[in-house]
Length: 223
Length: 358
Image 1 (cartoon, rainbow over the protein chains, first blue to last red):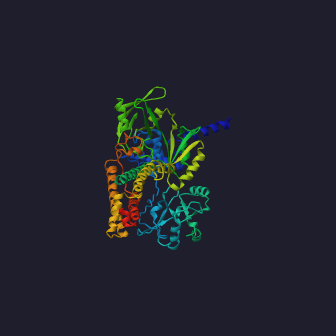
Image 2: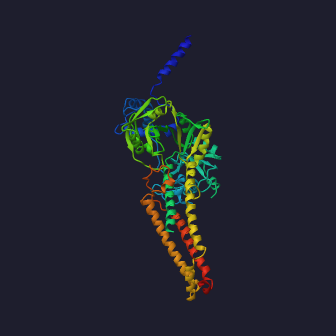
Image 3: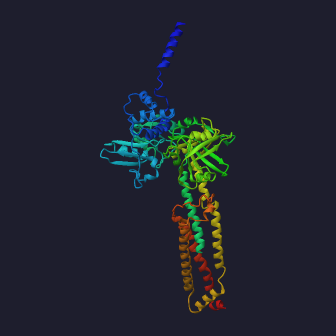
């Protein structure tokens, strides 16, 4: 009986300590694909001249928005807006430039015109601003293994979302049934989960990080 | 000859314009649409299914859409109603326009406004629901027309108004529209969705495009009919020429031969004559077609391609010059005409001069 009372005490206290406005548990996919775009639209439409930088906790921000900081909104919009502001606006996420090429740009290694295959463009950048574009990851790696010195950034596009990634933090799948413009390719992904999903679905051989890739691997993919 | 070329050219120009217009429209469609079905008939879907779709890698966005048709009894026409959530992003740019739609209001296209005015509705309209009760929506604004091949009787309203008119439950929506960032993955994701939603119809945009391209393709549909008719007429004319020159022309050739002209000379003259005629009529024909199609907007011919003739009277045909089309017309008309004039002359000219004059 006594232990039961203690248990009830703990149970109730834990229940009460969960704040009503604490950070909601939502999968990252849903946040990226639905909540942030919606939050961005709401922010642009309603929070034009409002300063949202002063909030120290998510709870405080969420409370303020419910108190009509950006006007009256329905519950669904309030949550999207708070999450957007907290994660995107006030968060720090490195966003790289979109890898765009003109009609005249050719791959540094194979010489192909790249504007036909915009989703395969990769880029190596140097401190003096010089940049080389490549028609896929295979060409980029071939160049990289011969010219490792002085490179600042290596950028590739995530296969699933086409967002620009830092290649050194990306995961690559070799041996899949998805061919790039130069044939067999190393396909880049933003995280291990995407890479593994892709590898399983498209009969890839293995998932590698940037550092695990060797020159022999790239050579074995053919010309 | 000129008229024939003009006719052919006009049909080619119109169909090209429509193809390009259609391509523009189809780009505003989502990559994949999931429509739930019961007994293979379209039905509604729960909007929470969207989260299942969003968890698939490769899907860049998924939206639960509310849209449908409303039959307007007095005007005997169907209105297309598109519901929208103000802060969602849709693949159709019309729905993303920034103007806020007030509660119980709607945006209507010009056709709908006209139609409603005929029935004396100027500032609002009463939608009738299944149980006979009424949902009134105020006309907030009239939309400018953006493209022509789409259904032009269009109404845009908030999702909750649309749900009320269609008598959907709170979580019911018409279908799910899915966008995929990397187009290589579309077919694969469509296959995944077919497994995830076994009782739904999963339509892929590319299939639609192929289907409509086939209609405007040179090798099928309306176009083929017109093509065959003009071609046929053309060949009748040619045949007429080939099946023998009339006596006057034969005498002319005979005289020329008697005067000492060699066979080669006669053929030469005939060749230049034929070439000039066909070239001039080709150019004239193209120019005529140009003016007819682009300047006057092809008054009667358009009706063959488009359904609702009255509504589309002011369809502005996009300026679309295709080298292939011009080349096609050229090779169809000019060499054939020349051949048709030269060959019989050659036949005649090789006979003895006196035989001909007889």
